[in-house]
Length: 319
Image (cartoon, rainbow, N blue to C red; front, side, top):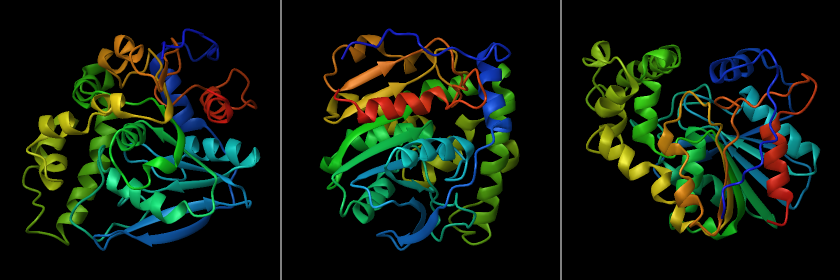
């Protein structure tokens, strides 16, 4: 599909660049509590996933996937859940392994290509729904697109999807977030990830060793030493190549929207593949000039975030 050219997101006056548009919503956004019901489901390999439900006996279900070191209760997850629940949908916000507040049981964690867990969630949740749609943020967006471009038993149940602030090219985005101007984000992620590795190593000392933790300075090094090998990849570059969703877009048959702001500090230029976009019959690409990473704050604080309105519009439309 042609890349969508409309530029209808207008950022708040004081949020004048991509960094501020990223940081302010992440730190200052307040979202009212939602009446989630938590359920724990078992994975085929004997681990568990914690999923949070909002139910109103709807025939439509939205499944939301969070970003790196996020969880189902992050403000961006709550905001998206709220707008769909308020418009008559059931909502399921799920937590990746080790992200629900309790460490998972297996020596593995989650990663950008762990679509088997999304398959487990869909297999468990789909019964009784006429329409099922997916929304994924950042890493969860990559996971969503990769899932839709693979062969899974439940893929045919998904009607549409939206991926927001998605690192389509994991290698390029890893290099981008490793730039000096992005060190604040990278170090915050690394602190959390290293803590989980240390915690996991106490349970699985043979599978996970912590000797290298002290010398890791960026996410690529972390993925090369931990994420890649722990999950069966040769290293960071093998992991990035095999899991980057840009390599799966041509196989997507559901209607999907990719929403990436051009001033997103996390995304490399390869995450705006306009030339590829015009060749794909089911993939829409919307690249507004502003928005930051998982930002898109409204000019009026009381308004709904633009990305949430855009997702609702797309998933309820006749595209």
